[in-house]
Length: 153
Image (cartoon, rainbow, N blue to C red):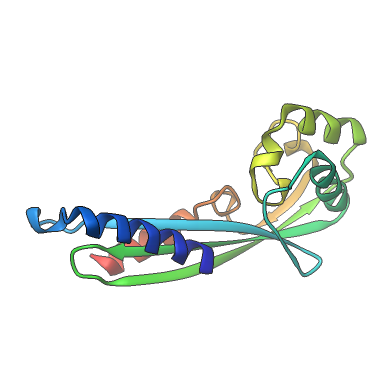
């Protein structure tokens, strides 16, 4: 929640210096979000390097991890702001080392929280179960975001 809040604050600050809200009668909605992976009680951000990405993914193999996604919605016209979070549990089959190496070679796992991309074609066959919504794992829980937008309007 703190990361999504900081993103929203930064954008609101920049928009206030532009002072463009006075020109429009309609509300403008700002959506800020962030997702982290939680593995064995430890929060994981983006891996720092290939070695860390490899350790992260090997840890998920045959086990499970969770994602915690937060969304902050701000009505820039009224100042109303509300945020909530969503947790999803992901269970994995054993992930072969050669699949892990291919994922790291491609590099996409270096740019996502916890090196976790469950929608990637190489990893999809090794996802045993997702308890929650895939869109939340991917970074933006749709139902939660829609709920917050409705409350902000």
